[in-house]
Length: 262
Length: 262
Image (cartoon, rainbow over all chains, first blue to last red):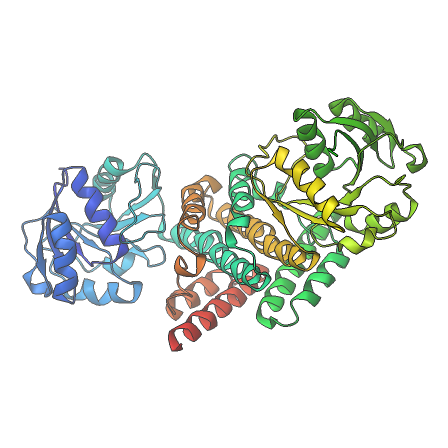
């Protein structure tokens, strides 16, 4: 069996990007469900699908129900979704596969590890897709589907997946928050954010070649208390950033002084 | 006047990269000073210079003394350095230009904003170089020198420079620390770090096109307490990471809920 027809449940960033890219690999997007008809219609238009705003209107004529909604809504959707014996997956990093266990025999997870926008196009070829299937047959089916999108498909358990998601929160969300703080500090100095781009690019570039524990530099890693104090003084008028600076520096100091003791 | 001959004081990462790249723009590296002769000799060999381990041995036959040592050592070096009326600069992000005020009439700062390795070669063309001169003449001299290395030369005051350095600590050091934490979490899950590289690349890529305040995503930015609780539970056996996760999520939550109120 091969998946040719897909029903999308959800119309957010993940549903949009998956819908567009499935379509490019010649899948048929049968229907797009969203709670609001307008949202469904928007993505349906992009993917040549039929928009619906009622789970009852989802047709049995499909090869896969793909649930790409916010985590909190997955369980309710699963409870109300009739799968007609067809496979069903969700796309969340942190929700266990088991939430779908009452949705028929073939269920699983299809988690693309990337940060998506609705409009910014992105190549799927490099995106790791984490697959989990309730049975071997489903796992193979999902793996084949994922391999049509990406060259990096991995079988990942629910336990591993949530840890991957946590790691992604550090690597993406917390990192972006650092960039945001940087920008605000630069604004105060009357300097534009682009001055940091070559440094940020090189920071990213380095970890392609060395593990991040070997590329750590800066005042905290070398235990330079004078610079840390000077920076904390400069941040007295920005207490929130000062707190973060102090906390993170302390963690780095501890981490690297422990390492030296080893 | 143009700078043709440079004396390097220091043999670390910044001195090494500047020495190599000055040499590529046909400057003569006259001498390399380091406290240890071996360190001086190593960089001297790379740059065709004479190694010295005594400040007294630094020749007057130069156009610039360039101090690239750890922040704490700059003041002592400056006190003991005879500049023979020649210009002198340091390369630090966080040390005021004034530390050189007793080193003769022409002093300034030459701060390349990048993270350097001793061995990894890097193109200087894109690296922002922050210039500050005690007088207009010195500033012009340094600007011309910097423009031979880089296409991005900026006149930056000491007050701005330390804020830029703080912003760089967030954008580079704290970001790399996030990557390190990610790697440790993935190790626990038995998943290799490379699974995060496409996400990290896209996180970096996004801020080339949008300001980071518009690219913030993730559980904290959308106020998803359930996911945050689940992640904190998963990190119970790693209290240090759990603390950081909690702190940063709280800051993001506060930041974005304040924003929504505005």
